[in-house]
Amino acid sequence: MDQFDKKILQCLQEDATISTAALSQKIGLSTTPCWRRVQMLEEKGFIERRVALVNKKKLNLGLSVIVSIKTKQHSQDWLINFKKSIIHIPEIIEILRLSGETDYSLKILVPDMVEYDRVYQEIISKIDDLYDVSSSFVMEEIKSTTILPLNYV
Image 1 (tube, rainbow, N blue to C red):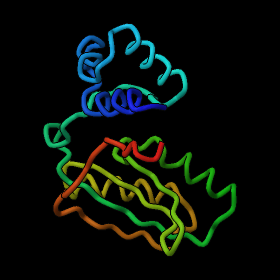
Image 2: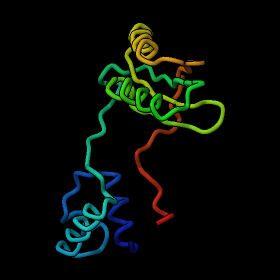
Image 3: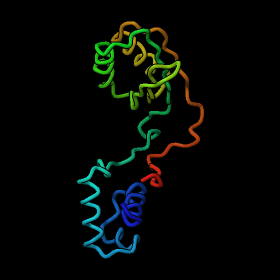
Image 4: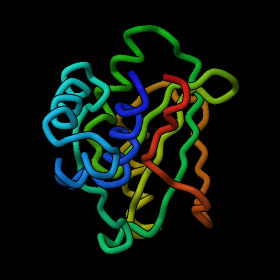
């Protein structure tokens, strides 16, 4: 990975719709080598996929909720069941297994409290042996980005 590859990744993280010609001009390479580098970055898994970032407010998803889950169960079977039970709930956009006091963190996007309660009820009805489920409601989103830092490659 050299400076050209990093520039390509930076540009594509900012705008994945950029044409190869515009990208090559922006990073200072001719079109064909630039295209080859993009293909190589995709083949090597540096670029997983190219997506559109959709405006959540336009989709009426104005309520962001962070749910902290604690359990006394830490068996492999419980974890498999936990994943299977909630992975397909579309309002859950992030599921993290954590170290520390909280075992799992979920990020949920919904229009309002009524819909959040419906999702909450769905979660607790599908998962056994929950010790504590607590919710924090996002009041202000200060930073939210999909752009990853490239200085560690």
